[in-house]
Length: 246
Image 1 (cartoon, rainbow, N blue to C red):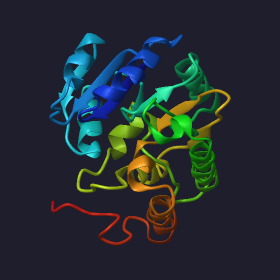
Image 2 (image 1 turned 120 degrees about the vertical axis):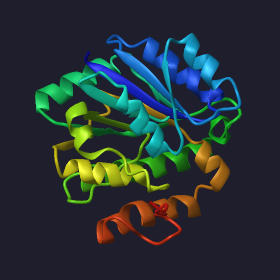
Image 3 (image 1 turned 90 degrees about the vertical axis):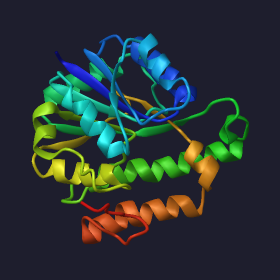
């Protein structure tokens, strides 16, 4: 088996179908699609079953990703958020080819904002401009810091070899920024790159910014997820990196 896709989800019926449809349309089909469900109350599970997904019990994103990976049979593991979208039909094919050509173990993707009808950016040009700026800085930070001992990245899309994942895994004690933590530790054991958007275009929902704002929330993310991780590694204050009791 070449590729297993792992998607942590909780009450994601509104977005999950869009992602599963984009996976279904890929020129290279994944060997497995695994949904790590965190006790959804909506139709997430029935939707996943309709698309032939394997289902495991999830929890916080770190727990869900680990449990999904525990049954994954692919050489490569692709972790996706449920509200993402593979924009180009050659995404998976190009991704695997890039990983093999560059002989790398871990990769991230540029994030491109996409919208559903009732989201703020769907009808607002100013919101779309703001989102374009937010993701420009996000994508630039990924590229710049991927060459440092403390790279920056988010869990919207992460691909790594199964062998590398078994050496690291997600730290289930961390409830926030567990994705940055995993990327950092995994990069110490393998080669990290950001796959060019000309090969793989990953669409991401802007619902977080609709809910939390497009000024102060991105600043918090930048401070805690980028500056904080670069300066102090694993922790940047209780409010941003919350370690659960072991």
